[in-house]
Length: 219
Image (tube, rainbow, N blue to C red; front, side, top):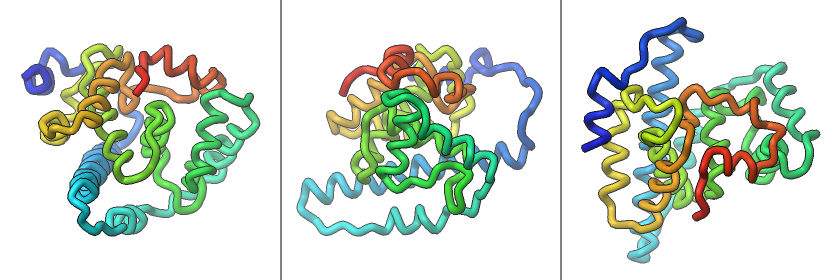
């Protein structure tokens, strides 16, 4: 009930400010967020129950994911992210670079990488500690739904995620302990990573320090 009232009551909506992106770009971003989270969550549930019941499963969700990727080559952005390789070992930026390379995730700015704002999803993977199997994508999504609707976050504004309310309620409704724990961990965070968070402010800090700053609890 708290989620529903906070989402739809005007007192939680921020006053409009200067727009950094066009309305069309903003709409595409929100559509990608909504479709992306749902697209990962539903196949993840399917895989979870297939595994529990011993049913066969395929790689269709990943094939669709690859089909949705566009060519987002940007040399300046590519170079900026590539420089993360040279940050100190254990720093947030260096660990993100290692995460992308170890999992075969193209850094933003590279050909066929996802748009730069979608890179936040990979930052969430790194901070949450969840991998990239479909089951762990499910947990990462649940973790994200936690901080997106987390009243403890400094930039709390759930009204911007109205389209995701059903997905959040679904994540809480299923009787899967690991899923509920992921939502709890996200809800305890002090920042909404999909809000006005700027990862470049913490790139040089140790990863573990960033986790403490954001109150990310262990699994």
